[in-house]
Length: 96
Length: 339
Image (cartoon, rainbow over all chains, first blue to last red; front, side, top):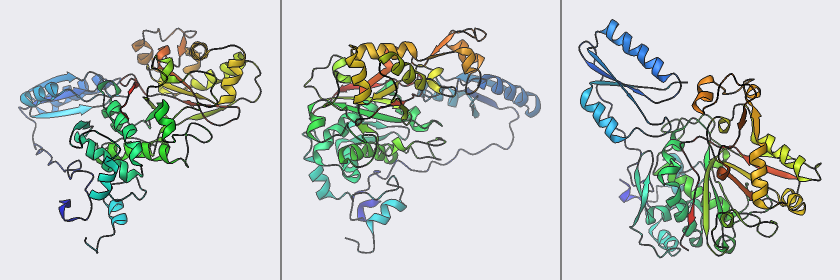
């Protein structure tokens, strides 16, 4: 990293680490999809519409809806872990 | 030393600065900066959201150095960092929001005077090393350890010039009142920082009023606006009266608390007025427990009197600066810091 530099790396070399994106499934049929409502106005309406379309048009087996506490605050780790354990694909939506 | 590296260019190309050159952090210079604190350089002050990188006393000294601080400014940077990482301040949200708000630091107490923090002419602007570099150090930490970079983790549409620096003190020589910190029951000798998430100041000119009621009615009007989030959320609002405006109230016998309360009372608009533009929505009215059809219902700019932060700052002249707030996921924080 920055050890060979004549000065200190102020970022500790870490804060901009690139994370690999999870692989995108090519087919949603039979999958469980999670929808995360960020609490902004109408996010629930947008997500419910998407959920219906996913079941009817793409053969999604089950849709699980979750809601954050407040849109400007990160979702708690328990909520993210719970969703990660139950779904194969998750969609976050903002309303507005 | 690697003679091929031009460190000034390197820091700019790496996005390790705010766009201006930084003081290159070397071990010697960081040791010099650490003379400003007795704290263990390896002790952890917190994790900077949203990236969550750890910030030790040493990391904060590195950034204070880069920003151009003197070692004697380091206690203020450490104290401010500790405060803005408190959960109720919700720096994670501020780092990511589309809004253009920033943590404004109001530093009260004798140490602010000792290190030359400025609260007089031009205190929101350039020319004052302590104001410029303490706020800049916080910003560099938020960028380098929190990754709050526009277009990346930050969805900010415009940001704000307050994201270069946002640190000042009050005009203690010319204020007719106690400081903000003393108004919150801190002792005069205590060194206190208050941080609130706000927009850039807008200036309210009044060179006409000769009594407080007209003056305060006008300032209160500037605190309200269609399109301002503080109409629809419980937000912090900072009002910085110039010594001249403050004196007009004080000469009429008003205390600081009375002015604060009067502004809080006056800063409202009937709901019908706010329907004419901006971010009024029936859902937002309902979320505040207000009937969206009640056109006469007065919507307050500041929901909670304690969230109206009144200070006296700036030079002589008939102006008050008003900083609108953000949303109810953040609450202003205040506390003492070690010198």
